[in-house]
Image 1: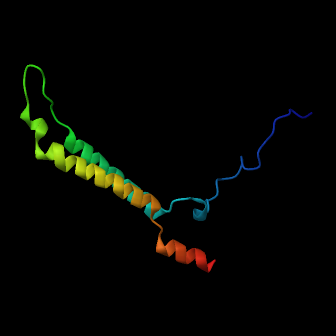
Image 2: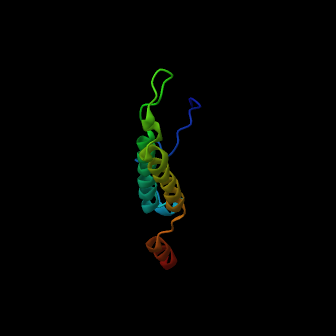
Image 3: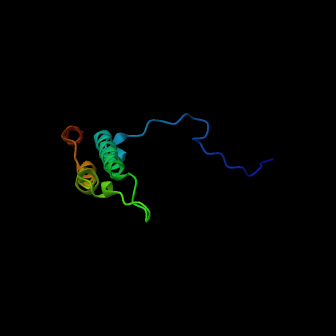
Length: 99
């Protein structure tokens, strides 16, 4: 007597390695994206700090670090992120031409 349960052929096997050519981004792209993400986080962390309240004015909110340096670092991180996504690895391109 059949129970009507459908068993997938892959359920009993260990997962096979996937072909790296199936991924849109390579290992180097993902590494560069990670570096860009850290740079962006660093820029936002440099912007952080205490603010002013109605009772106490804090002139530190207009410091060079918070007004110029931190936004520049964050912006460069976003630009580097675009580069990291669009980067084509010459080795991967060369290897795919051989196959």
